[in-house]
Length: 353
Image 1 (cartoon, rainbow, N blue to C red):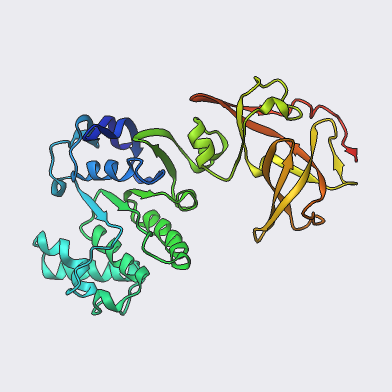
Image 2: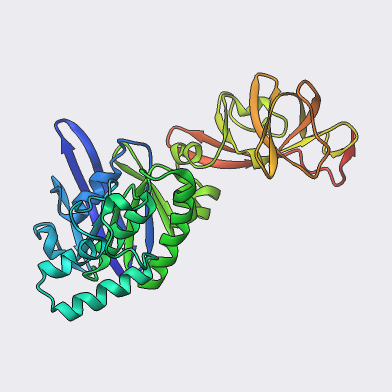
C-alpha cells in the first residue's frame, strides 16, 4: 500500500524552481534516501512533506488523504534535524518525553514509552544526562527517540549524520537501518552522500536541480541509470568525449560522449590472457590503494580512465604499458542514454600478449 503519493509538486523561491514538477509514490514501511547535490531541492521536498513549506502547485497525499492544507502537527510526522535540535536544559529522558507530554499522555504511559525507547536506541543509563554530556552519536539517537516517541506514521530525517565524525557515522547508518526495520515506520532521509544512501536505503530518489532524475533500488540505479546525471553522479566513473575512438565501440556515433565505471574495465599485464582484438593499449599514470584493490589511472589515446585491479593479481607499476579491455560504456546523447557492449569480444578464446 502506498503511504505517500506526490503529484506534480512545484515550489519556487523567486524565479528559481527549487522543486520542479516532481511526482512519486512511496510504499508503507520503506526507508527512502533523497540523494543529490547540495541545492538540488531535497530538503525543500522534505519540508513540504512535513508541512513546513507550502507548495506553489501539486498535491501531497498520505494514505490517500490530501494533506496540502494540514498543519504539521496533524500529519503524523516525526522530524529529525541535522543539528539535533535537542532542548539543552532538558535531560535525555525529558527530551524523549517532550512530544508525549504535549499530547497530555498519562505519566505512567510516558514513563513506559520513554524507557522502551531508551533501551531500543542504546541509551540505557543515560536518561538523566543533559545533551552537552553526550557524544554526537548519542545526541542523534536521542533526537531519533524523541521523534518516534509519539509513534508517527512518517519519519523525516534531514542530513541526519552530517554533524557526526566518519567512524560514528558508519556505525549509525547500520543502527538506523536496524531500527527502522524494527519499528516499521515509513522513513525518508536527505543526504548528499551516495555511499550513505546506497548502504541504508531500500530505495533511492535522485534529485537534481529540482527534478526527480530516477527512483529505484540502489542496485537498479547503479546498474541502469536513466539519465546522464545519474550515470555520472552514482559511483566512480570516467567520461570520454568520443566513444567511437575506443576498440569495440566504433559503432558509436562519432563524437558521442560516454561514461565508463572502473569495474567495466580489465587491466592486463604482458603475458596475461587478454582479448587483443577488443583491448586498447595504455600507460599506467597513477595508482591508488583502496584497501581491497588498486585503483589504476590509465591513459589510452586521448582518454584517461579509472579501473580496479585486484590485490591478488601481480601489481602494475606507474609507466607500465598494459592492456585496457573496456567491456561496456554508458553512452548518452542529451537526456537519453544506453549501454553499449564491446562488439569485438566475439573472440572465442583469449589471446596471450
